[in-house]
Length: 108
Image (tube, rainbow, N blue to C red; front, side, top):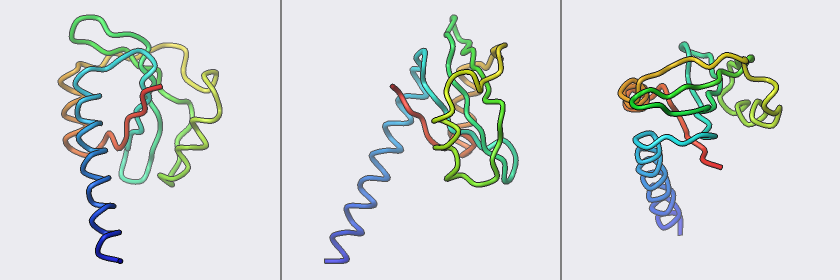
């Protein structure tokens, strides 16, 4: 029974990672990226718009040192993001994802 549970968990994790890989390759307005900023600092990026190879994201005003607290940041709403978006090249987003700095991607 435990072996089946472990196999299901591994399959879920692999499937989720592949889905996120597809999402980072084709960003859309409203996507939310869970991002590790420094060794123990986490925050959110929210995609404002995509122009050519550049993705403009709003950065959340708050950081947390506990990854599981990112859910609480998401619940705070849009007024907790900085007003000016920052540009990030699509290739840079891919690099951040591949290196583990982008932890999760939510597409509403």
